[in-house]
Structures are given as structure tokens and as C-alpha cells.
Image (cartoon, rainbow, N blue to C red; front, side, top):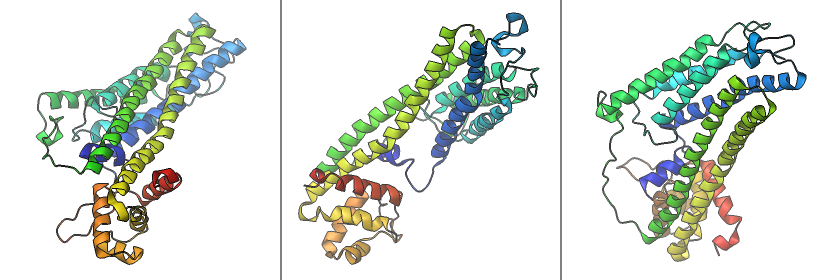
Length: 352
């Protein structure tokens, strides 16, 4: 299996989180929190104002102003500090990381997200000021988005002009030594690569729609004066959120299907030893240091068969390759391995 497949499929399922994984998690948490806790409450207030007929006049500040009975509740703008702190963290955390600008989670996405949050946050931080309990608590938080954006842009420029160490830059792809994979590996990697490419394309499209919906909703929050605009803004935001959850729901199924195809392909190529591969996966997921001796003891198989199975587990990237006298390590969370085995066994035709 190629390094690309390994990184894309296992990056968030391995027992150890990389610096890039931390960036991805913080990025998504900040984005979701901004959508739900910062952007959605003001939009709801505008809709409530339209329904109740309490929307302020233009002289009173319009939909972002204050009137009798408007806003209907305090949107708790201080919550903007949470995503602001997250984006400031990312602007510093990612300085030494050679992120790819084209990646859905890369430096370009961070720059776009921080700028969008800055524009939207600047508008919402001054919304409803003067109402009970609302006195512009989020103004500094919105400025935090601006600071994060400036730092991210400066880091991108520093990388572009080679003003940072080579290991920090978005360097050209490293030429790796080519190896000749087995037929099963090549066939399985082809399937996995196609599925992973499809996943990344959907991910990138989804990211654009989520932030596109956010920008549209932000613009609508400024010019919102009628029902059609309100419905369009809310509809786009809800649609983007639904697509987001659909992607996450499909993510685990994508991983299981990809590995199920790879494992069953390997089983078919192993001949008489094939049926033992699933048992070997369960064995290494049950604890202990993965080794041929462990498989021989737990499965009651011959030394030759245990060596073959351990090599297959290494090729599937479930266990690490041997490094001198150091023991092999489990490269995937045991829970994921058990899920893959259960997924295969739930479909008898796969192992028939």
C-alpha cells in the first residue's frame, strides 16, 4: 500500500496524532463552533424579529440594531472568543508545518477561514449593542480573527519566498524510492486510491460550500429586510451543515469498505492461509506486541503461516515494519481493526 493511502486513510485513526491531525481537529471544531454558536443565533434573532414584527427601522440600526422587544434574547457574543482563540492557536501552531495550500485543511483554507471569521465577526460583534446585557464583548475577539489572518498570510509569504527553514516550507513532493508491489497490493491500492481521491474531492467541495454558505449568511445578515432573503440565508447554512454531517457519517464507511476490499483481496491471494488473516487481525488487536510468535501461539498455526500472516499485516499497514531488534507496533487503533473484521464477516460473500 502506498504512503499516500496510508496517510489519508489512517491519519485520524492511528493511535498517535500528528501535528497536522491536531490542526485538522482544531480547524473543524472552530468552524463548527463559529457556525452554531456565533452565526446561527443572530440569524435566528432576525427571523424572530420578522415574525414578531419587532425588527428595528433603518434609523434604529436595521436588523443589527435595537428596538422594543428586539433582540428577543442575548446571542452571547462573548462565545466568539472560543473560535478566535482556536484560530490564533492555529496561526502559531502551523508556523513550522509544511501544509499544502491546495489541501482542504491546508494553509489556504486556514487563511480563508480566518478572513471570513474576521469579516463576519466584525459585523456581529457590534450587533445589538445597547440591548440589555449586550455591550460589544466580542469586539476584541473579532480582532483576534484579524490577527490570526495576518499571521497566516505572513507565514504563507515567508514560505513562498523561502524565508523559513526548508523543512517548514511547502516543498515540492519528495521523490521516493519505487518498489514493486505484489499484485494484490497494487490491485487493492488502486481501489483504495480511487476511493480516497473521491473522499478528498468531496471534502474540498464540502469545505467550499460550508464557508460559502457562511459568507452568504453573513452578507444576508447585513441586508436582511425580507422573508425571501432570510429563507435563502438560513437554507444555505442548513444545507451546508447537513452536507458536513453527511460527509462525517460516510467517512467511517469509506475506510471500512476500502480496507475490506484490501483485506479480502489479500485473503484470496494467500490460498489456504487466507482464512487465518481475519483471525490474525483480531489477535493483534487483542493486545500484546505483534509478532509471528504471538500469532503462532494464539492461533495454533505453523511458524511458516504465522510469518506469512505477519508480513500481510505489515503490508496492510496494521502493524509497523521491523526495525532492527525493536518490536513491531500496532499502527491502527484496535477498535478500527475489529470494525474491519466485523464488516467483512457480516458479508459472507466477501470471504466465500
